[in-house]
Amino acid sequence: MASSRDDFVIAFRSAFLKKENKQKFSLFTLLFISILIIILSSLNFKIIKDLKSIISEAVYRTSFIVSVPENFLINSYLKVAEYSNFYEDYKKNKEELKNFQSKEILNEIIISENNELKKLIEDFTFTRNKILAKVIVDHDSPFSKTLIINKGSKDGLKIGTNIYDENYLIGRVIETNFKTSRVLLLSDLNSNVPISISPGDVQAIVVGDGTESGKIKYIKDNLIEDIQDQSIAYTSGTGGVFRSGAPVGRVSINQDEFSINFYSNFSQLKYVLVEIENSNSLSTTDNDQKEIVLDDTESVKIKLLNDQIDILNDSNKKFLEENTELASQNKNLLIQNNKLENRIKKQTTEINQNKLDQEEFEFLKLNLLYSAKCQKSVFKKGYEVGTPEYKNCILKKGRE
Amino acid sequence: MVIFRKNKFVYKLYAWLPILFLLFSVLNEFDLNYLTIEYFSFNFPFVLIFYFTLKEYNRFDYLLVFIAGLVNDTVIGTPLGLSSFSYIFVCIFSVYLRNITIRPNLIKDWFYFLFVITLINSINYLILFFFFSYDLNIMFYVINNLFTFLLYIPMSLIFNNYLKTIND
Image (tube, rainbow over the protein chains, first blue to last red):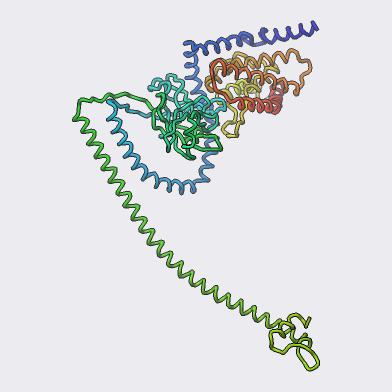
């Protein structure tokens, strides 16, 4: 017993403390250093932050280079898949483009109205500059949904800066280095975003589920019924971390669970937009300037409405053309229909005639064989030739 | 190996391949996540570190393993030092197994590996949950553990062949 304990101690000491051949440090030393680093990083020590920042700058770039072959393979596969669906996508896009063109006009009007109203309720405005950033590391780990972008504190990024894919919110900055930043995606388990769900204007919080979607939490029980499938979720701006009105995704209802399908596909991000805020105060005393701004807004609105009228006229013209074409097609089809109906009628008559002929032929055949059995004579009961009873008797092959 | 010995640079590169592969895998998060198979992931560095420490491969420097851990933390965004701690822990258990083993057996090593990675993943989970207040899905850890365990046998067969070519 004692010797086995001694063996354990020897093996343990050897594993822990002994510096092996060609090893510069014992495992104990390295273990101690790593525990020390963990403790210091949990206490947010500045040395650890700086060390992490230095390592990050070097590692992110290296990681980007190292990922090149793998990314090339993935992208090649995706490109092949994309080419195979090219024609179908083209048709869908064409349809969508038509819808978007008319929606865009309405959106521009709403944006211009929105800006006007914001100016009326506030004496300052935030001009938002969106700068383009490249995604340099995106490993899609199951444990953390983050990505690294090539813009950092040098470009004005701060912790909490909102990140977009086109107009869709995708996350916020949680760590900034000099020229790189880490973005926490909305799908991460640690991401919480206050949202408004429209229609109904229901306030809720969307929490990432660690995969590709989010779960809606913290809704008041009496408001659950107001939420419909495919409702639109956008940021409410509560808490001040995310600005209000940024589209997030669509609501999906599975049994009693509410989830969000994000508009953006986080696994396909190559470039993102970083929103940097600059506060510009507007002078409230300068009324003339305000009027000029309002005049400008009015002229923009008139221009947009004119554009919309043009678009509506164009679509009207197209509809009329389509209508005429459809009417002529309809006429042709009616003529064809009549022809076909006549043909069917003729064929039905022929078929019926054929049936009668066949029955007659059958009767005559049987008549030759069984006329003696059915015919009435002086000595025998029967039926008179030509009566329906006689015919029936022949078909039954004699009297019963 | 005759070809390698003629070219010293290629031979050196080949001999340092495990550590290069370790650094490559931590920089690239090599776990085939882009296949988007639900929950599918594995921890390749654990397999690599466990195997080469167990075989006492002299070019497998613990300091480089420690640095690989720091790199991994930076790439995946976990608190600095956590992966280094896990990797060094794997090394310690692996060295301990080597010291107490007289007749190496792949199956025994395999199950010992399961015990080690389960312990380390549990410690990782606890540290992240209690000290850093991370929200984590335990299911990801369980499945990652399982796939890492299953990967050990095929990878050890490949590594065996690699060591054979080095020793030839």
